[in-house]
Amino acid sequence: MGGIAVILLNATIPSLAKYAILIVSTYVASNLIVFLYNEAVQRIWKRKSMNLSIQET
Amino acid sequence: MAHEVSAGKENRLFFLDNLRTFIIFLVVIYHAGWVYERSGMLSSVWIVDDPSKNDLAGILNVITDMFMMPTMFFISGYFTPLSLKSKKGWTFLKSRFKRLMVPWVLAVLTLIPLYKVIFLYSRHFPQENLASYFHFNGTILINQGWLWFLPVLFLFDLLYYFLSRVIPILMGFISFIL
Image 1: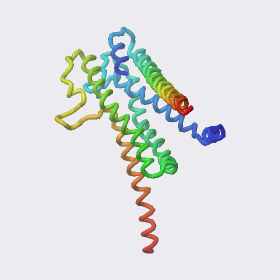
Image 2: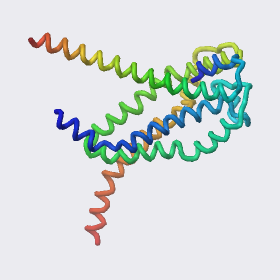
Image 3: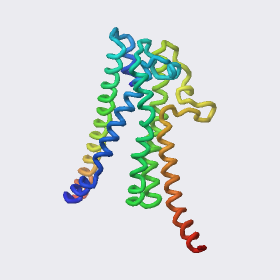
Image 4: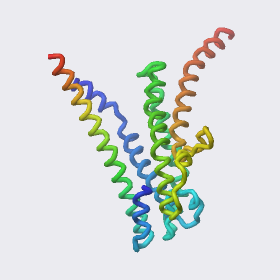
């Protein structure tokens, strides 16, 4: 949120528009971070379980 | 397996999932609001203080502040007895520690310093010495910023676990006396 708010500091748009942009972009960015984290964790677990099954065979 | 998954989905309280998602959205509105609200109540400590202000941010913050965190704590508390039922004793405490205190430690060591970097940068202040970014005063951690709710939730879990152990013993003792 802070990083986006810093970018918006110098934007010459009304305060309400900045407020709306900050809310939406923060919500989208935070959901994206959580989504990418979950994807990465799932991929790591899949690889680990595949490696284990290969070793067992 | 498929049956277990479908049974789990049937038992899931979607109303509380949706309520939690809505409250998280309000948390974003609330925190974004402090950047633009007119009274300047937190302008000296907030991550960014934009000189361009509006009234809506302050009004929404006053309204959402009344019920936002109590609702989050209520939802968490609602699921605590169910969690303690499925995970007995230390497994429950270990799982809560993993979900609450491990993210807290990680955030204190990463997000709190980043907060200060952005705080100083947005105000055109020079960056300071490294120790100050971790809010250390000598060897004591003195500030955890907005992360307060994680240790508070963990303390509530500890308290619930303790009471769930002690109350049955007390009740047994009282019924024995009477």
